[in-house]
Length: 194
Image (tube, rainbow, N blue to C red; front, side, top):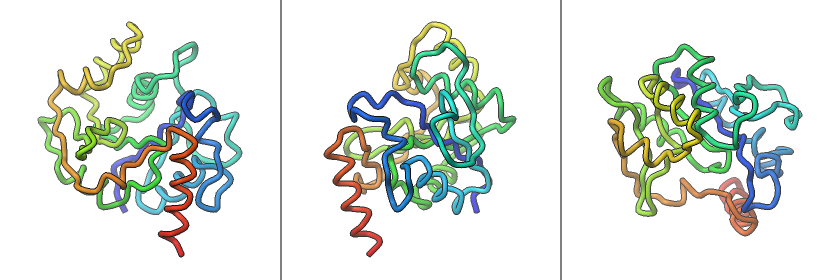
């Protein structure tokens, strides 16, 4: 069991999906968010859900809510996360990446050192800022970004002490941004579990 807390980010707009992807059925659960939460609870001793509101979710979980009157942006979740939790480092995962596994999480944690601000997964398709380990050292910068409505995580990572950890399997990091990707993920999930 991994003791570093995991924060599942489920507060996005899902504009490309055309529906709230965190609420789409997945893996035998009524929603992708509930599937991810239940799955992550078997890996991490503490799992939280970052969202704008808990009202849309019909299952029990510890939620960390974005500050009021804030755009849909991960920066809001990072600020709330570090303000609410007293941890020095947390692992984050976007709700729409259901295939990232325990080996990836453990590798990110194992690669971390005290002098880093963050450890980010990277594949041949690019970096994956919403699958990474973030240190409290970035809170001030996240607060500044939120105040200035600057939500470019890539820019923050480039200016921080970031370690990009390379993984060879792009499929582990598949995002469900579009309807066809969601349908493909359901087929893949069924193939992996039968």
